[in-house]
Length: 318
Image 1 (tube, rainbow, N blue to C red):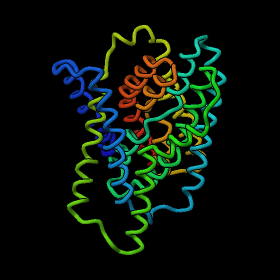
Image 2 (tube, rainbow, N blue to C red):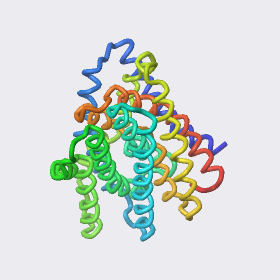
Image 3 (cartoon, one colour):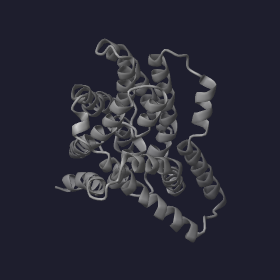
Image 4 (spheres, rainbow, N blue to C red):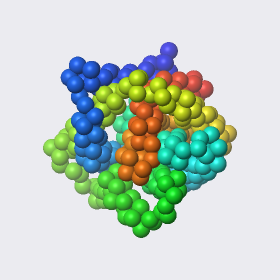
């Protein structure tokens, strides 16, 4: 019963926030323009503040040398998944825009949006340094392979200089680096950030998840996905079921447990990253399919993550 309550603690708030977004769409007439603008605001302000605050308040003493093989495992898993998808997807569809959208939607995870609340629900505040550091290392790889994939199927060469420049300017990466440096300096000097500032950062960080899931809920539209139902079914099954089974299972076999196993789950079990739509749109891929993949994998992930947490908790692995 206790493990079921923990699983509910993970998913019930997410469902509530998405329902508020659906209400905003249906009753308050929140349109696509509002969704796009709000996503942009979250990416450039709310998410960076949340990640900075979580990094600053995390207990860095919990990090051990075991995080190195964890990072290698996750980076390797993402690369292997990407390579397999680049081989399989072109044999399933003839359209290059569809190919690029499917590969990106299947490999690119919304780790920050789903991983942090899941870790907080299971372990509490001050115990998410591992997942935050993993986000800092895996998110750049997601960006790199996404650009490569979309440029490849667009038939153009990858502009590595521009891509690396964009990664270096990514607000999420910059906020994580700033948070890590601040944490180290505060730990070494024994100083602290003034309480009013911390309260402001905390309040803004706490608003991030409700707002993000409200936007996801506002984007729900069953009718728009009918045409792409088979592609979406494939993406959902591979993204939320097959990939987590393979990589979490291998992580268990290799001995990862507790927060380290939770970190693996946060990389391979979340839905498609919200930024997949923006990138697909900018690089002449199938933006509509990308947007539908984000919305529907996010909806189904609430169910799959519930069962992942419940099963792993019952087995005593988390």
